[in-house]
Length: 511
Image (cartoon, rainbow, N blue to C red; front, side, top):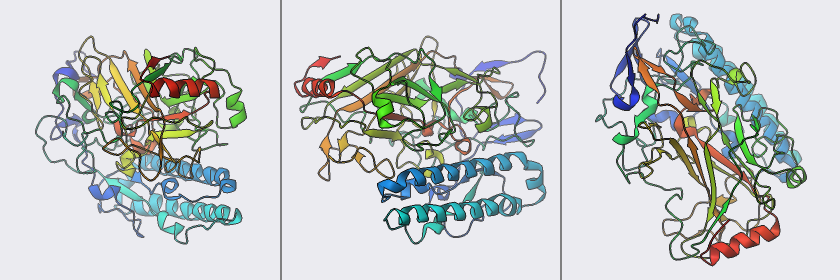
């Protein structure tokens, strides 16, 4: 769309974005997607899309890492490298999807034959190597790993009109396991190299206007909190322990993830902010982390706290423009560090807590929740002054004088034995509805992370989204807010960890 000499600019804070709306784009219509619920189901043996000749917005592949719960310890690093390769294969296929819109328009089988078919073949070979890694280490690889090879193209579909509230309240903002989300975010000409706005943000893959909601239109106390934000505190261990580790004044960032992809450079394909431990890279050993410098005021806390960065897509670029984890992976715009970082550990409302083991790893949320579905999603977006209103599948538009808030509560039940697990999930768990830990798990201090950002509200300019902010993601996740996540590796020294436990169990507030 060409730029007019005089433009009408309407703040999103005063314009409710309803799912039934359509925005003009280049003479056509920007149709916001309501992705089929079936896109979140287990893929079958057929890699064909369910949409016939419909335009494909993104690619949905089974998250193999979440399926592998029994991987011998000696095989985990090799398996992690193959899982990272699966992620890269999806990214490459998604990039091809974005760059071949003209060919797709002329051939309804193009996506199946030229993108999904070759992707399946590559995944079959990689899955075979995963099985070999597991078997060589004395494990037993699943016989049917190949069933995870096929991927689906997820089509754009005209949404049903909503009730104008912009939020499906009462179940955490979700709509029966799907999301009322934006278009796949690609311009018909492919990627626009981070320059033009258009229907999918500056990189062509999000966010879109329907990813935002005016926080004043969200009902107070309406979000169900299954993953722990409201589950702790009360009559058990009521104390708190706060650690002060700064706001990443050192601008320590990389696109690695030493938990999920150890030994793999750019294993996350998006940038993380780090506070606390300063030695965190994909290649850091536990000893490297234990001996690393820390930004925490109490030097007994060498833990690593990290989360995907936020960017403002205002036409400027950061230092990773065109680099892995940045522009090469669809993450563009100016990185903004949080203005406030609060790291607080709280107790369990039914029992005392026990000490976390050294090098315990916890991931909360799901970087692939847009295609994986909501089982591991754990997001809470809000605004200062409105923190009783939280949204999961929308970014909040805050009124003037209010700042964006990201709040995360980690799993607080531990199996009592393992510092990690093959899928990085099963060694920890959330409390039950009554606050107890199930399956013989023990209550540990729950980490709660609160991040505050002073960033301008996005606007609508001539029907286009202007200066949106978005969390870094894997490219095919389209920068959806539901993909927000947070990571923690415990390196409190033993004395300080015991001090934390005593403080929480005795009902004190310490730091």
